[in-house]
Image (cartoon, rainbow over all chains, first blue to last red; front, side, top):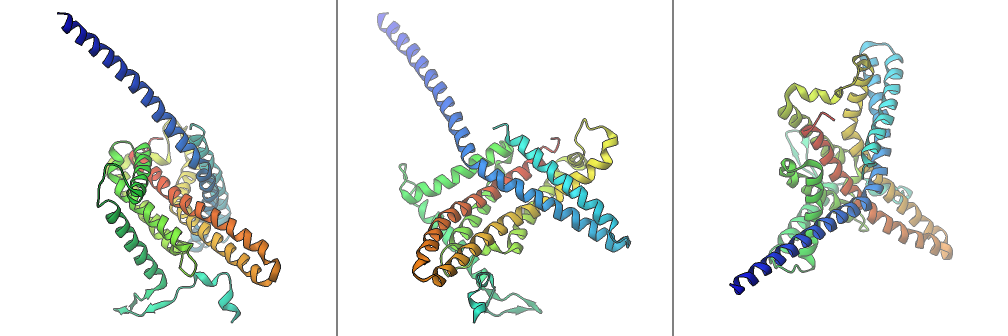
Length: 103
Length: 244
């Protein structure tokens, strides 16, 4: 009888301990993940925003130029799409910065 | 002779072995030789380092495991459980670009990723994959990407072109970032190397600067490969969940 009780007690404390350990492990994992993310993403994000800004303007300009070339309305579409490209560059970098701010 | 010492001379492509099939030039160039070397080193490294499979990893094995784990976690964080099937793609991309960047830093070698056509081919492949995957998974609902829910309809004529431009610019921004970073770094190193010779005894100053630049370039070589992998994950995750 006493032996059984002892075993039960041991089991109880064992499960308590493993719960505690799990908690600590989960906490540490999430901290590690956060640190890992922060180390790289700051630098990486800077590269990302700059190239997005540039590429959007480039794509907008080339779409406008191509439309002009086929429709024969020399500078109109180029101007419109350059502006759209610029807006979308700012918009994209704003959106990705908003995502980044969550970390 | 001065052309030989131009800082941009290192990016020139030479034919090493001329080949032609059906009028198409498929000569073996220094670029393709470098790619073959990169793939060979990559395969040898990964096969050799994982051959032992010891519980306590040695140096090589832990290097392989670290890179594997890092990209695996990035893929899982960005794509979720379903997206892990794209892990092999992301990992091969990461390792290929990383090794191209790193081996490009070895003097007298050639930086494959400094050519925009190489990086654009990689980026455009991802772009095509993400687009096809989006349409396969969501059908016409994938076009929701261009007009998010909750946006008033009178804003559509303004927002849709903006979103389309930003969607098309993805592969270009991927390609330009990698190629421009590699090219700028290597050109800068070569320019400062020219100063070392020109300044004579005072050349020690630019020489020290080159040492620091090399450290920075090594960091950038790693970082660009990592950014490429992360953005591949991000673009693929957009085709999994286009709503936001």
